[in-house]
Length: 135
Image (cartoon, rainbow, N blue to C red):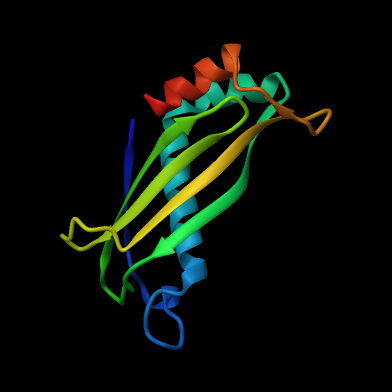
């Protein structure tokens, strides 16, 4: 299941060149990931009570076009891959009514045992929970 988040570019998002600062995009992407996960608080709560936490271990962002003051950004977010020990959340940002992304990102996450700090295989109840989020 994909979620869609809309963000209007404000003055405080801009850098000295008058376009959205690249670090702001990471904040926009984070907000969109929360919107993906929020409807699944039940899944995350069960994992947390079992001492399982989801962590980001890598973010790859490809920028193709800047955004400016007043642009409306639409961020599509969804889990694109679930592997044995990690998964990937794919995100793309479109501006205004354009369908071509101005940015795409792949965010790799792992599940970790909070007590040991070790990565866990994505299997059983953990895998089922992630698959529920993925839709």
